[in-house]
Length: 287
Image (cartoon, rainbow, N blue to C red; front, top):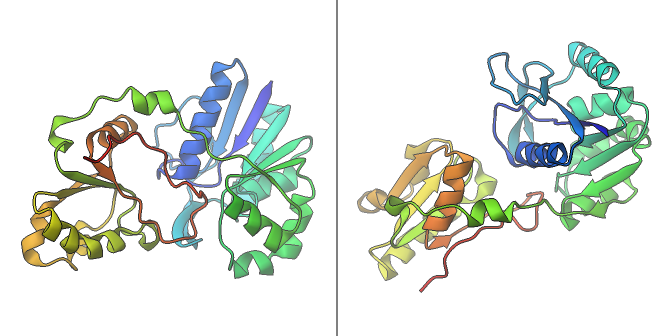
């Protein structure tokens, strides 16, 4: 089967939706299908052979974060060319309501369309305001998937219709086979996420850290993710800041090793996340 998958967010800035699409595409390829992913990407971004660049994206505030989206006449032309060259049996669009490639593909595509909705936002004024524009595109969708009950509720309350809830998959074997890293072991709490994005909840963890250290002084916090490290610890007393270690961006392999190494993984997300289960991990039990 020839499968076309549309990614709304820039491929060169890692995120949950991009990882979801990557894993799905590679799974279909292993099954023997022909897969092409259309995604925004800078010209110098190394891309897997199955990804087609739709051009550079621009940063736009979206759903409590900053999304890098691709929209406009040039993007629409590239969408049409990708559809023509691909001659797909089915098209799988992620986030068809975002002002990016998914919406453009909905307008231009013919044939079966599957859409996956990731966004969870019960207060989206933008989605309500754009209802009349979005509705014409959504009527072309053959099947709808929501990654969580919250994402389904957002769709139902803002745009009508319904969706089947299919949670994001987790490659359990990949995480289970990871080898712990010695320097990340021993009285460690772990956090992974964009440290300058409030909804990921690192400030909540920083607020709790003095109480944790008072009870267990030997504890250290390992933080993996991009952002302003100095700003992240500025709320901590100066004498406690050395108990926080920043690892920066880590590879998928090191992410798995990280989760196998720490004693406790903390996900203090504050809301508006598309997944009810933020992350499935394999962490040794706390003793």
